[in-house]
Image (cartoon, rainbow, N blue to C red):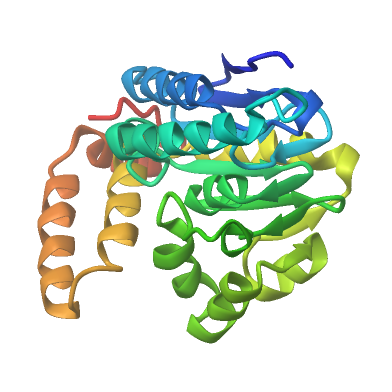
Length: 268
């Protein structure tokens, strides 16, 4: 089986990251995790990229960790265990490199099919999730005697769907279809499969047209707010608001309002 790759392209101030190993529904290897980190780093470095879409090639979004380890060959089970251990070590070392929650730009998961295990984690780590009507999501770690590997399932999922619903999904490993995922709040909305990328691009372009500095700090406040008490969060909000009030882009927004024209954002 091919090792797989992670593709990156930029269009209209939007970065598109595609997990590309369609023959295994985009299961992730150690190498691919590194490539994913490289793609996220490229989007992070490029100030012209103001929103990022994550999707999968072919019929799947990401079917989780590749633990095949050459099952058809002698010693395949041992290789599978080593592959899983290597992925865990890579996750620990490189999390800050590929974590979408740590990317200071809005992110959209375009869930085009199966998203289970690490794939469900990747989707959850994106700020907004659009799902094809063919998508299925599940945190199946318990069936491998594991906990969610990126910690998104135990940190973000309870905050998205509530503790009891998260507990049910994690304890059972149940896979939900797109419609149930929408009802639970796991995905923002479900769209027809053949319209998914069109919808994702349209949303990404809308976000990319907004001032990037404000978008960056909104994301910072959203995620840090999960960890802070309301008083410290209010203080952090005031500090960032004061910075934005003094920014070049805020002055531009006021000028554009009075001059009845579209603002030109510089990210300053």
